Image (tube, rainbow, N blue to C red; front, side, top):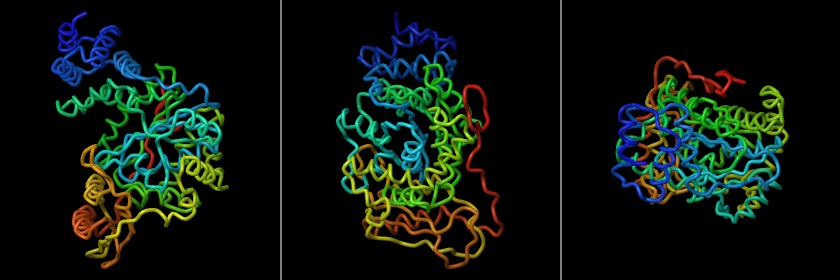
Length: 441
């Protein structure tokens, strides 16, 4: 088998065989295929696309390019949850312990954030003492006894994806549906869970800006999961405004804790219940989604989810008191308020711009090597569609220095638009997608 022939077939728009794809991924992993040929094939895939079989084969080959986690010794049905990333997305912090309270085992490997899409691991590490690096036996013990454990992703999972993503980043081939889907799902399959729930964001602050593109990505990932024997469901949710009222690591942990304690923003509560219900449904802890929603809402109301979060934090070395007393979390020393210049309605929020503001404040990374300020971020007093009066506080920014707070406040002010009429709000949920249908199950 020769890489030249594989390149030529895909350049001509022909489908690759399973053997050809496995040869390409193996050569990528071992370094036997040079970067210029890997890049050429990525460009050919980006232009010509891949069918469902090719995409599934590529995903499985990348998943098997490194360690495949074996979670079979952990009791219960293990369900993973993944978000394609957004601004203020702290849903895992609520949905994971909530799913555990519903009887699901959540043995989750999460990633760090890059740019304005925050990572679950970064948020958890803002909790004093919390560690996300655990020996495998400790990870298994906590997941099996508490029902939820979240650790940082191993560098050995899907190494072929790591190399290919680095090449995609510098060859203008990031925006290819089969390459995006296989990149996400290769890591999910390698993580060893039994079922997968996907939260696919759509809108200004999402990677996929249009509902059509988000649906296409969701379909592709659900197809991959199903072909790999992992029951998979995808929920498409809105990212034309930040989730909740907080953006930034410790600020988002605080907001998630308030939701677990029966308070917090309604959108975070609703989406957390929906995601946890889907996890319970796939794990067959409820016969249908309606029953699963009722179960999840009850476990949030009665404090069961809060107790799981407290126990997970305690077992992973953190201070569980932050759940009920999140004021003990880090907070930036310098702060600035953004005031409404006129009366009216908060008619538009530049969600992607808001995310970039959080990076300016120190809450996100410009590069993988960038350090984080856990106490930096934005706390909103108003959200999309709220009425405002001139001089009212719209938001407060937090940073470690006065100059960073000043720069972030000026940038954030440009992201908030006051209008004379109340805007029409986008829905929080758009679609549920499974292999059988495209509607909310």
